[in-house]
Image (cartoon, rainbow, N blue to C red; front, side):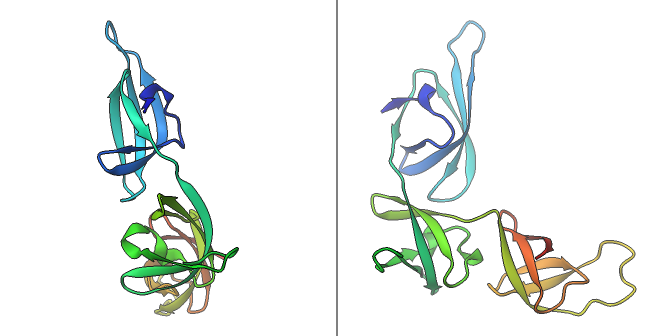
Length: 184
């Protein structure tokens, strides 16, 4: 166990069966009482963020997370399959453990966090380059305002793109919200 006053961004700990990574840390000193520690954490198993408050004398159970760079091979409805480029060993990971796997392309390398041989999270870049596979043609003259249309991307996701984007164009997509950022 470590005191909560030792928490800093990047530290991982276990609480109530979930594993959290500290994103922000704030030690607040209150009047005439002891201080409290506020941390913003991300659940590595579920992917969501939350704020937690601890008394200054609280303790948490630290955990060691191992990150491996693996090559994405393919996925089926239940699992994703990766290969370790050093050992050529194939690793089967349940899809429910990997948030953001839809942004991976076959053959692409990805960082996966493991806790006791359990894959708990996928680290994807904030922006990825994807090809547009289907979209309606832009109609000339409809550009008085910023008009967007639906486009299907090579990974099967749909996003809104400007009218000038056509089938076959490569675009940059923000993986945090799935939105178009610019043309590649």
